[in-house]
Amino acid sequence: MSAIGSATLLPFSPRSLWPSKSFRRCHPSDATWPSQQDWKRLNDAVEGNLIPVNFPLSRLKADPGSVAAKRLAKDLRNPFYIGDQPGLTQTLGWVDAWATQPSVYAVAARNAQDIAAAVNFAREHNLRLVVKGGGHSYQGTSNAPDSLLIWTRHMHDIALHVGFVPGGCEHSMQPQPAVTLGAGTIWMQAYQAVTTQSAKYVQGGGCTTVGVAGLIQSGGFGSFSKHYGLAAGNLLEAEIVTADGKIRVANASTNPDLFWALKGGGGGSFGVVSRVTVRLHELPQFFGVTNFTIKAASDDAYRGLIREL
Ligand SMILES: Cc1cc2nc3c(=O)[nH]c(=O)nc-3n(C[C@H](O)[C@H](O)[C@H](O)COP(=O)(O)OP(=O)(O)OC[C@H]3O[C@@H](n4cnc5c(N)ncnc54)[C@H](O)[C@@H]3O)c2cc1C
Image 1 (tube, rainbow, N blue to C red):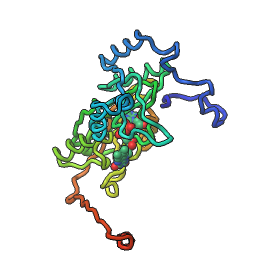
Image 2 (cartoon, helix red, strand yellow; image 1 turned 30 degrees about the vertical axis):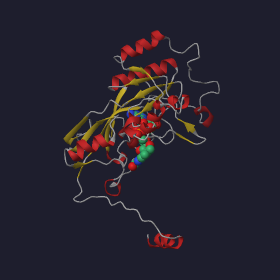
Image 3 (cartoon, rainbow, N blue to C red; image 1 turned 90 degrees about the horizontal axis):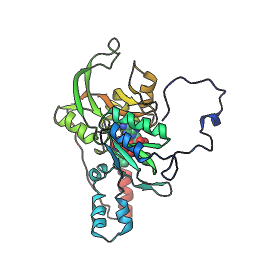
Image 4 (spheres, helix red, strand yellow; image 1 turned 120 degrees about the vertical axis):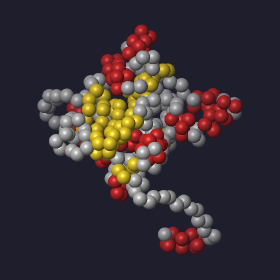
């Protein structure tokens, strides 16, 4: 994350953009690692929502044949179970690239103030900070060992608006139907509120356990994107905590650079999003899905099938 603020003009050199070689984050074995008193202060600031992070996979490693390990192996097939564990990610790793690892502590954030407290604590103590919503990062960017985690799982408030106008855009935008989603909302919760209960359409993705904030910040493509565009293109406003701990609103007229950056700039790059407001559409008149499996009887038949497709 980078801080928002004024910058001194420096002669451009790509090297000057990188931290010095001696820069490293604080680790639990370092003398500068926060004391129990420090952690207690953070826990008080977030109203008791600081939790040590359990790592369920250690059960598999410790005793793979145990009942608990077998149960876990079954649970790992359930994306909702994984989403409920601050110490797990939906993709558990990538061969020779990364393997999921738990943070030391997590702030199970309830609101933007909790997020700001965690951001300030991480900055002041030089801790690695990670953010996890739906936990679907393919690159493993929502987990890191020896880190403090901001876990947004419990931030799933949803509010529908008949005529939403982003703050400061009263003279440039017409009121439009929209929905405000807490950063930890997964798409299934959004579709339930918007489509099942309110007969509107919101542009998300195909996987219902992906997080809204992660998907929108990485662009976001779903079944009707050819018609309604990317999920990021439907973003009207975001509330975001930047590296200086400030809670900011970003939309087309307030912090517009930050707003454009959020529309595809990648999760966790510009701050921690606490809520998003996205445009709603009318439901398409017809929609549906056809799934089928064709089994070719021979290699030749398979080639013919591919040709026909
Ligand atoms: C099974 C599967 C199906 C998918 N299907 C689709 C699809 O249909 N369409 C599509 O476009 N994409 C799809 N994706 C890709 C998905 O949109 C991205 O991986 C997305 O970044 C996941 O977001 P998340 O919150 O679930 O994951 P996370 O791992 O929690 O977060 C992803 C990134 O965003 C950051 N982040 C999360 N929340 C916040 C926040 N509140 N503020 C700041 N940064 C945050 C994390 O730090 C991380 O870097 C799919 C991925 C998987 C694994």
